[in-house]
Structure formats: C-alpha cells, structure tokens
Image (cartoon, rainbow, N blue to C red; front, side, top):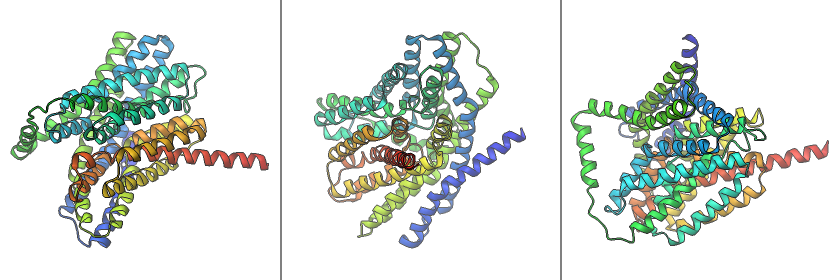
Length: 498
C-alpha cells in the first residue's frame, strides 16, 4: 500500500509540474498584459489542482488496468492467429470507445444546435463511431500485413482534401474538429496498447515502426465520414430542432441540485468507460474463454480511471473552461492582434505539455524504442507543433482565409515529410498528431476559436469558429518528423566522420 501511495504522490507532483506552464501563461498575461486578476481566480486555481489530481488518478489507473489488459488481449489474439477475431476486436474497440466519448457528444450537440436541427446529434455520433470502428479494423489488418503506415495516411489525407471540395462549407470545420476529438484520454492509451501489443507478438514486426499508427488513422476517417454525412443532410430541407430545450434543461438541473448533477456526472464517466469494458470482457470470456489475470488489480485500475476522469472534468469546469473564455474575450478587446497570436502560441504549448494522453503515449514510445526516443523531448516537439498550429489557425480566423486552403497546404507538407522522414519516427509522429488535442487542449482551443469568430467582425461561428483544432493535429506531425529527419542526418554525418 505504501508503494502505491508513493507512486500516486509521484504521479500527482508530476501532473502539477505539467500544469505549471498553463499557470505561468495565464499569470503573465493577466499581470503584464491585462493588468488585472480574473474574476473567479481562486476557483480557477482550485480547478487546476483538481485537474492535477484527476490526471494522477487516471495515469495510475492506466498502468494498473487498461495498459496490461490491452497488451494481454493483443498477445492472446496474436497467438490464436485468427484474422476475423482480430479484425472484429479492432472494430468493436473503435466503435465502443467513440460512441460514448464526452467530447464527441458535446461537439455533436453543439453542431445540432448551431445547424438549426439539420445535423442530428445521435446520427452524427453513430457515423463517427462506425467510421472509427472500420478504420480500427483496417489498422489491425495493416499491422498484420506489415504495410507501411505512410501510404495509408497519404491516401487518407488526399481523400479528405477531395471530399472537402464537394462538402458544404457549413460542415467542413465541424468535420475537421470531429476527427480531432475522437482521440481522447481513454481511447488513445487503449489503442496504443493494442497496437504495440500486436507488434510485439507478431514475428517480424517492430513495436516502434509497426505498433503506432492506429491513432492517426482514427483521426482522419471521421473527417471523411462527417463531410459525406454533411453532403446528405445539407441537400435536404431543414427540420425543426429542439436543442435549445435540452440545453436549458441541463442548465436548470445544474441550478436546482448541484449534488445530484455531480452524481450524474460520475455515472456519465462510468458510461464512457463501460462500453470499452464490456467489449474487453466479451472477447476475454466469450471468445478467448479465459479468465482475466489479476482481476482485482484490473478492476482497481478501471475504477481509478473513472474517478480520475470525473475529477478531471470537474477541474476543467472550474479552471480551464473559464480561463479559455475569459482570456480570449479580454484579449480580443486589444487593438493589437499580436497579443492574440502570442496568447495562442503560449496557451497551445502549455496545454499540450499537460495532456495526459500525450504523457501516456510518450511513455509507451520510450518503452517501445528501448532508449532510442526521449519521451520528454517528444512532448516538447509536439507542444511546439501545437503552438505553431494554433497560431496559424488563429491567423486564419482573423484574416478570414479559406480553411480548406490551409488544411490542404498542411497535408501536402505532411505528405512530403512522410516520404523524407526515417521510417522509425513516421508512425509515432502521425499518432502524436492525433493525441495532441485531448481533454486539456480542446476546451481552451475551442473557447478561443469560438470567441474569435464571435467578436471579429464579419466572421461566422459556424463557418469560422470550428476548424481550429485541426491545426493541432497537422503541425505536431511536421515537428516530430523534421526532428527525426534532422537527427538521422546528424547520425549519418557522425558515422561518416568516424
């Protein structure tokens, strides 16, 4: 027990350390630029501490439950050698993980409201979940066959760009953001564990080269599916929606009984994890017909994940949500857009450094690379890429330029780097682009994008407010691939010189 408490204390201090960049950015901008303490500053500070507590509990839960189970299942399926079972498991995990994803639910409900009922929230979630399930099955097949990831990603990016030419402009930004939010703090570690477990178990596969890549494929496919869905729904008459009634009902519940709402939030966390747990139990007992090893340990791990997610969401509502909205609104009042760009860059870097999913994947990469990759260096590179991406995306909103043009140019750069970068870094780079926007980054970036679209004259919240998140998935891929290419060149020169 003392060892467990020691590990938790270490994880908590590590989480606090990761949140320090966000605190520094907010304090510096409030003190030196805005020169005022934000309303509810104490509540925001308490929220950040709760976020740190949630991250610590979540990471301990991953190490106790989700990581071991994911790798164990992958190993057992590989030993069975049944391709249909592996593909079915990939689809089931992808669908179950995404259908109850909180970020996707929130985006779907917001899209239904803004679109005046044209977009149905449940149908949108089913479309995305089905797309993720199918691409997970395809990703498992790719890993088994040993195909290079970059060709799959190049085909995916080109398809996204082509479909965008035919999609209505109202759906494009939403589609890009939907692809980004499908990768979350629960899904990403499980998918990464599945990929690495398969690559470790199959002869001739490398965990670093072949084990990563599933997350990247999960990001791209929903972008295509949602745009195709948009082509269908925007070709029909607009139905009458009642999204406003739903939102008001939730607000009334918050005001009427906060304690009841807290209990419902905790059960919603269980709902988010339950589909994944049911899929794991079904395949473990009904397909493999073997009992879980260390059941108490696994159960404790899943419980910690649920409680950690709950604390994390509570902390977000108290701390990060108000910070994002308040800072964006205050900075927009300045005549000089430079402060907006500086804040976008700084907050993009700070939030990415605190992402629990990125921390988890960084640890997996260190283990898979056997000392070849430094997890902290990778996180710094990803954070730099996100910071640059959000700054570029912010400029697009302010200038009113075409989102499609920016994304097309970004994907062209990624495709070019994928052909030049060393193979050992390619799959990891694509996956890191997928995990860069998760529970910490999404609320702040979304608040910034909608705030800019609301206050900048001539901008539309539907057309310009969405789409900022896609930049967080493009530029980290570039920074990590460039790092890999540069390091390989340096290594080759040293070998030549010696």
